Length: 552
Image 1 (cartoon, rainbow, N blue to C red):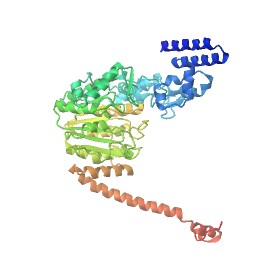
Image 2: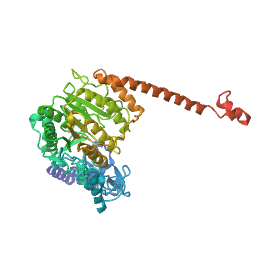
Image 3: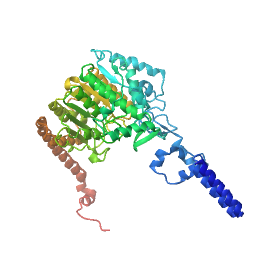
Image 4: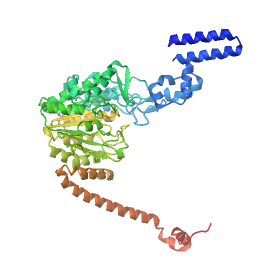
């Protein structure tokens, strides 16, 4: 590029000498200067031209440095690029003049990466944060009487997987997700301490080939030779990403073997990148290899005949469903936002039940709206998830535990609390003799993901959550979704038939009562006060009832 610029400059000088007029001189100098500026990425005019032209989203993501200009004409960029800070908890941007995030109320200098969700939310990191450790540790001192029976898989090399491109906002799937969970567990005295660590190994190519194609595996591995790359606009990779993905998958496979063999009671895979969007042929949705699918097959190699995967990530696990779509030995149940296919990734409708002999072994509970909370999830567990799971009688249970349906998550828009996640974990822990592995998927609010993961691990350690969801009342949207799922899945699971008639009767009664209430409300709105019929307001009464019209 430098040689090309020199040739252009020499050519321009030659033209100047031959013509000699001031007009030609100025024109050729401008031409040479403009061409040289195009060749030099550090030139201010290049940046000014980029700022003045209409920019695309790709320009903003791929070339953020070109937007920075010290020229006075570009001062309007400064409030966006310079005078904003990205919240460490939820990644949302905030004006420089505020210290609390306008989205999640987290302090600008929060200590959440040092003490997890125990750190103060509205104050900067201080020595007082250390006091929470003693308070919480006392409440869990009697957990896990059986000793180090819960295994946790973690490896710091997975923190090296990060987005290289510098942007004004942080990518939601970032290393801080693991740091916040690890800090919470450390502050609580749970890990290290009460759980047994499992060392990581890289998954072999032979193991990956049971789930993915060779083309997919090679596409991930080749990123080791690149500083930065993207599978999709939202799924990045750097030179460490392929190894992080292999470590995550290897940890999950080894945890499955440890648990099924009895060397560990249960386990939690504290891993990234996540996996449930990765299909047979492609990486997408922040996911490179499908960790849950690899785990299921590893459990079967260890001796499990039937494996249950429950995916409570707010996004449908399209990759996991695709991999086991025809498999009757793996039952996949997903609860996710769907909204008629308008919520990412758009798959997971209730009528997607499996194909080619695998019908009924894919169960989707697609929420029709956001804001779904504890009561709705617990209700769906009681009437769909548990009845089907108990009839399936799995030998091993996997939870694809995305915590992006948690309250406060910037992507999920739902309202599940740590208590709700603990209750769902406790329900699933009653299956397969407690052989349960929880695999981290999504979740992008650090306070929500760390508190929820801690609540789940406490259940794995033996703590029973409070029975605060007895006699719960679901939302109308939840009831309609559950009935839709039951009407489809009752064709495959006989245990659902006893519940569907009762729920259908309750739903019809609810609709009838709601219809009467609506009519009464309408009547009260339409009917005028009784005194309007007489006296000086009689005219208004007749006008209101349209007994006559005013001519205009």
